Amino acid sequence: MTAPEAITVEAGTYRLEAALERGRWALYLSGNADLRTVEDLNAFLKRAHAEARRNGSDEVLVDISGLAFMNSACFKCFITWLSELSDLPAAERYTVRFRAAPESYWQRRGIAALRGFAPDVVEI
Amino acid sequence: MPAAGEDDCAFIELCFKPSAHLTSSAREFVADFYQKVFAERDAVERIAIATHELLENGAKYALDGVTRLRIDAVLRDGVYLIQVSSSNRATSQDHDALEQVFEEMKRYEDVTQYYLAQLRRTAKQAEGSGLGLARVRAEADMNITYERIGEIALIRADARVPKVSS
Image (tube, each protein chain N blue to C red):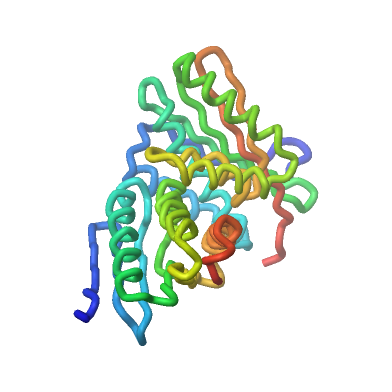
């Protein structure tokens, strides 16, 4: 089996990185996730999802602690991903573990909302 | 100067065409400004959420692309009364769409259930999220209202934040 690729998408105001770390996919988002980010974020999450499925991952880590802000359109990208993941048969699902900056109000509330939306696949 | 009965006030008013770049810049400016007014970071982030989402909402609905944003923070009896409001000219169709959004919002007593319903609905939509106003209500914990004044759509988001001794 070929090793999964690392994925990096970078524009002036944001950076999206995915890499295999100790056997699990880790996604790192940093900068500002606003309307300029939506298209890249959608494609990035789709690709990360495909890689996680291809490799039979049990868990994907999503670290948003480096984000200054994420708008609702970018949250929708996560909703789309989590919805697709939740619709898979249980045996094919993996856990999405979110990591936030503990002092960030919007990150705590946003992740809590995502967990409320997809409690079977989201861990905090 | 604070009005009678007010211990302090700090307001910002901006009027511009909210591009993605300017919306983020405005949010950063607002957050930086109010960080110096409030000791509590959570209050600043709530204002930042409302600022960003109302500006993006205004960009979507503004007839001439221009949105007026105003943020008021008035200290009264140890509590900050915060209001983030946006106003813009809108078409009749867009007014009707906004009225429907707010009518639906009122039907839910439980804010969490309302937000979950919006998240589930948006999961099935190919385009757009329609989550911005719901997010102001549910994540920024603000009471949000809509008023039509002629062709102007006025959206207000209100919160009360106890003053924290610094």
